[in-house]
Length: 151
Length: 82
Image (cartoon, rainbow over all chains, first blue to last red):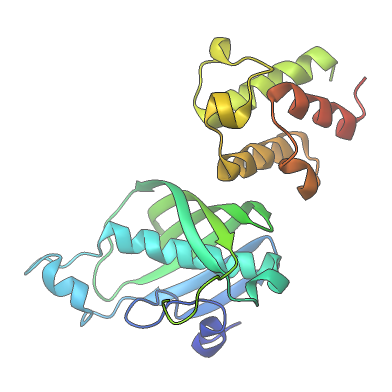
């Protein structure tokens, strides 16, 4: 393990039950990160998606890939990331290739297509074992916080 | 690579990223005003240029580039193609 959940929480603003990275297992600073997420069969979203036939919602796979992208941004631009900016997903081009089930562990590999101070374009592959679940090119904007406590 | 080859490749790259037919893309069209290229799309165009030509585009140049012709001129400069 390279980074545990406590370290991840210093980077990602998301928290349980919406934190979709458990650990970061590989880091090539500014170039590539690989992260893992174990999908607990008891997670609430499996109860409704779908009853008797639980499968990971694709939008949550996108969220997991976006969170891996933020971690990659941190490794490329730590000075900016440490100011705890807001991250806005602006565009995703995603292809779902195979379903993800309760008990699977998602392996999220995020690669830098281009990262700048105010955002980035990242290529992410989500796998379960050697099987590709989804691929995504996503872009996100990085904006300094202007508000506090929701005001 | 000749200047013409670079110009053609640049046009292909930009047209591909913004999803526009080659024959509709004018070199002096304003990215933001005429082609609906926002800052995120500009990052993607920059990444495509960097990967294709194996160059690094200085970050401060990204916001200055307004047209395909300007982007091509910068690529020529970075690749030292005259």
